[in-house]
Length: 350
Length: 271
Image 1 (cartoon, rainbow over the protein chains, first blue to last red):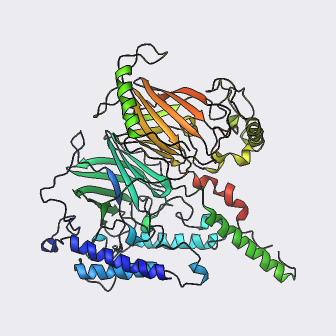
Image 2 (image 1 turned 30 degrees about the vertical axis):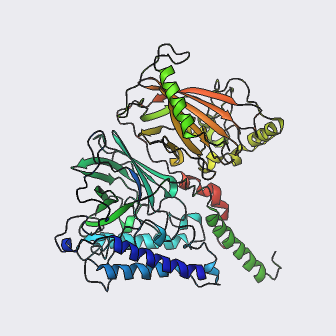
């Protein structure tokens, strides 16, 4: 596995190079930081940077973006501060990159899998935006999800029981996760959060509409920004119903009308999501979202992820069309059962 | 796969087109309609559009017929249509045989039944609205069906990096007309529910021209030397969805077809 070792070293080298090139805004760190303060500015961006505007005077958020991060949604239990030092952040990235490169034991059955370090699939090969935050959650200040309400806990238990009744993950296609079934992935959201790879987005801004194309699942989000009312409350969609508006130089997208299946982090179908997009420099689009779901959590919570400018184009991700893995998983399980039954009956298997 | 001409050629063609077409009416349509402009001075084709014809059943002229699913009766019957093609499709003999096989097995073979990406031009005249999001460098066409998306590259013209379901589209302006040249298709999509098909040599050139505030004239030239003896054309109007609250609705059809595709692989209860 020599190439894997090389990849780890490369990742470390990249991170070091990034740190050298990136002046860290130490002075702005602290309990009263404004959104975006954890995002290092790129050295090449002049301090006189002003946001480019579209012909209708709105900030131009268009382009290709990537939201890859090594920062976990929730702050690790053994970390007590809001920001890492650059050295600590680098060490965290290197530990995570090393774990990613050696995700399985070479020579074992789980190792028969595509190698994340090849094909640009591991996070160290993405246009990584260095984030000194110790968690994506910025509110509550502890960096962790707020406590669940009694109703939220009851719902989680009921969902777990329902899953148990459905049987094992290989018993039926519906028992697999939405992402394995190519229905919804974390990149699609909402909220849109990175997975291990392919965390690519393209934003188009046209009068009356914002278009966010998520590369995974070729997932388009076309968001009306013309002030129209939301869909009727009884019309529920996996991705909800979104409306966009500008709050100064920040694009705000509000989404409701989710389904019970969407269940983001255990949310109810009445979750309200507010996403805020602010271009903080040429290279960085700051993405902040707030989840408000009083039926699930004792208080709203917010998270923040810098999106980094990326190189296009996006490619077609025909996930469902090529989902041989899912088919083979189910077919393999049925074959195993057939063989076991034949063995029990003393018949030869073919 | 056809390679894209050099940028210089395109620029020259565009300049020529700009000079020749600005004062000329669009052929056969009387005085040319001039669409509202985008900020960069192009015809604004943005909006939610939909075809209104029977070509999604069969792009050729056809009489009405019973549907494919007995239980659905008349609600799934085939409405007759005058077709969007001039004359019979110029299939090569061996390809015509395959089309007939497709017809015979269309219930199991039609990729639409499996919620697969629809390909081009089929996406355009499926019975769902689609939205054109227009910016100077990229024009995206977002279809309701299967959330299919096409990106039309207006400035950065390149060859298709790999074959795909929706192809790789490069666009140019020919006066008032958006011309979209698409190659890089796989051989998995059909033209309709009648088994009309193509190979991975498919090359589609589409022309979108606004003929009123609420109509686009759509025309496409289909070229596929592996399947057809000569290129052929389709054309139809596309209609703006005029409802005040018109919007694309989610049509994530994967969960709708899972039992169809994987149902036979469900674990059977112990006997």
